[in-house]
Image (tube, rainbow, N blue to C red; front, side, top):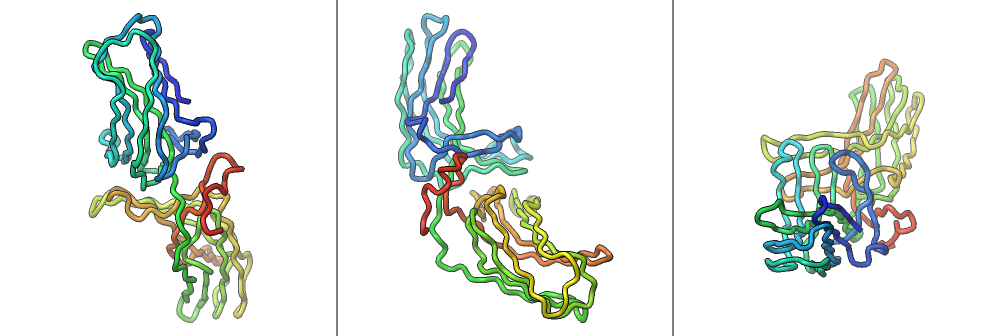
Length: 312
């Protein structure tokens, strides 16, 4: 239940239907703080009540009371001009005088919520409800409550392994293989590295999960990469014919599905970066894109992690 007071005249409260039984999801707000939001999916109905409580005021004249459901994208470099991709309004009360406390039912059905809630380094996609009391001679009274959206996907029909040969002529030649190219957020990356030729002194090898966030379009595209994890898979010099296994669990990391093009505003992609470092600290690497998808809801309630699983 979300609550906020507005001075001494009026208080507005937004209450989701079945609030206490709804799932929650951790979400980073614009201040970088983690907060728990009520969690919905694309198919869910958004419903509840708006409560208006008079404080010291005996009555309030208004020009209408309404509630809006808004989905918007905020770009860091243009935060003052958020882009609204969803905007729906439900009128709760026509213009008149409010003389007693009052509650209004609201319901949003069939609302397309195809995009997931996302909070990145340079972009934020959010959904929120905004209840508003419009007044003529006094400031409007409004209350905003954010909620999260996650969408479970079906198992990819095609999920081929990744096999590649890389190296430096007459110095290094390796084969690496990952069992699949698409992984759900609670998956395990399994693979192996096979050394065909080793003529440099390798000190260690690591596997890095890289998230690349792209905002804007065309010449105005801005890319920012972030290392989500760094996992050492070998310490010491390998020899020719040696095979190094890979087993990396994804569940501990803060990952999202791959977003290839969200309303022509941003994308989020993931890569596996295989890095070898020699004794002179020279780095050799090979990067391969992978696809992330959501098999289960990533709820704040640990007992709820398997709700909505598909294709177990």
